Length: 310
Image (cartoon, rainbow, N blue to C red):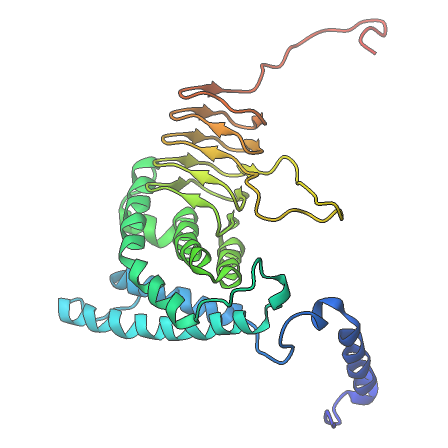
């Protein structure tokens, strides 16, 4: 195989390509990754899927020119069809390269077309949830001048749009495609939400940078979270071989009407009771009852003389 003359002698391309091929052949990850020749899901194409889904959900904000009912219907139908066709192919790719021996049971994955058909039927309910999220962002931020501003510019709203899409796909049997979509949101907003996290309606992440929410998080209705909040695991169970046990509930449950302020870290399968307020920079590893207010202990000022306190 010839790689052309430009630079090949300078870089010794043929030797490097050969050594890389041999390294891949020795990799346990590559040799057990199902069909090694199958294409894998593409983050670039999945970004196109999400962009088209966004346009289908919010056509007036995403490129529709004719805002008549007939014009919007045509725009949404055409754009949504493009998104779903792209999505089918990406889920086929997921199924093609996943190692069958690593599945939890012997059943075959659902056909990509069936997953996407079920996903499409969920879009109206996803839209209803997102409208409540947008309203919660507008109501919860005194700087917001309109719901249009919130939809077009708030990172927390962008993150929850991606999450609602990713969560539905995760539940329907496309976890890798869902995880890629979640990471697209993470890279664009700084908000890291695992697609398995269950989040109720009227959810608002204010500012958002540095928020982390794990796979088994459960969040109720009308919850508000500020930047740098972590809803994480306290510890990880291991099996007899020392490998991590997957899928166990290990992240917090946050009930309805809770506010969690900036920098709070909440770890483990604990419950934050309804109506509670968790103060900034709190470190919490125990459940708290409904209507609790949890804040940091006040700093104590003391004076030490002549080596006292050492």
